[in-house]
Length: 163
Ligand code: GDP
Ligand code: MG
Image 1 (cartoon, rainbow, N blue to C red):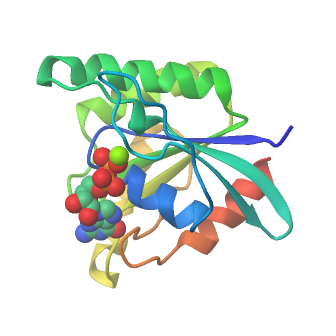
Image 2 (image 1 turned 180 degrees about the vertical axis):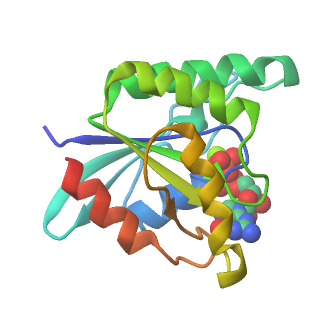
Image 3 (image 1 turned 135 degrees about the vertical axis):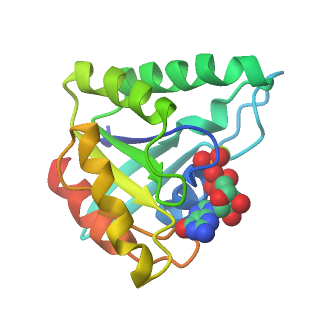
């Protein structure tokens, strides 16, 4: 079976945008259950001749404000169970939040390889915004812009290195 890469992070950090960047136009399956969003959540990707599956765990978000924290925890647990490598996405525009710290804590305990990725680094001025994410304890953050596509190649280099 192909190795599995899971994309984890709180809502709105850009998980689906990055997922789509990683899988390109390859077909993904959508589970059609009540309370589960209709985003495509499974896909496959290839980089430097390495093929792997990608899961957008945020596609499994439950609606309702009070459910957000619960679904973030659920996502993290799912990622830990399913994934060989976890891509943990944060947002350069908001900086480190309490939910990020919560996810970091769960991921850290798992012992799985985690790639800390700071999205929305849209321009050079934002490049320095990634430094505060060192506080999450996963070493060097990879700065990317899902909307512009910058840094995706660097992220993929780190992903295949850890597969
Ligand atoms: P998800 O909830 O984590 O899946 O996040 P989405 O991929 O749905 O993105 C949430 C919002 O952030 C959307 O409005 C996106 O257009 C926006 N977004 C995603 N990536 C970037 C980025 O690199 N830069 C900026 N400025 N906005 C982004
Ligand atoms: Mg999403």
